[in-house]
Image (cartoon, rainbow, N blue to C red; front, side, top):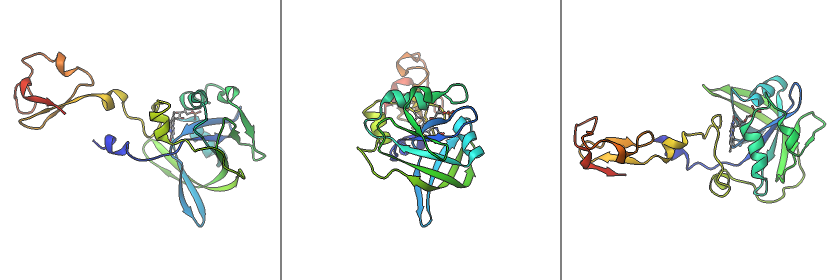
Length: 214
Ligand SMILES: Cc1cc2nc3c(=O)[nH]c(=O)nc-3n(C[C@H](O)[C@H](O)[C@H](O)COP(=O)(O)O)c2cc1C
């Protein structure tokens, strides 16, 4: 139920750049937000399984590249769907190294900033890194890409470790409501039409014929 409500929240689209042990790395996130202005802090939520999480913990710093509507889907795919643990993702993406040692993406981004971590909060699946921006680009170019633009214009999806991931099948499933007891049948596994004619509501035992599409 809350999955649907939470899809109405707005986000931007970013690449987090980190130093790595063998090579620099970057991953796509949609969860960067400003937390306070004095002192200036931002937060980002990074899954425990992402290599980027390990690198931020190790080096205590990262860059944020703010993606624009002109950033290619190919660059987002390269950084958002494979892990720097197994592959050098940046070999196929344009980037520059900062003096500080972290990469900034050069794929039509709007702007970038470099941050040092000041605090972390652990959740069951993600670490929230709270960090202070220490350096950044001097100008902003183009229109920042929103998560909504990524989903509805580029038609991109969210992979498993993105906080906004919902089982696509469940999200797209049709719902049928029992008009007697209000039980909701989700047809993500078996389409409603394919249920046998003698199928009954598992809650009140009413026949299939009383169900109405939601
Ligand atoms: C649109 C989009 C949004 C994402 N948002 C996040 C996010 O906010 N936090 C996160 O941990 N992973 C997020 N991801 C998933 C990571 O980018 C993905 O797991 C990546 O492969 C991690 O790479 P790494 O192992 O090199 O760190 C997102 C991916 C996409 C495509």
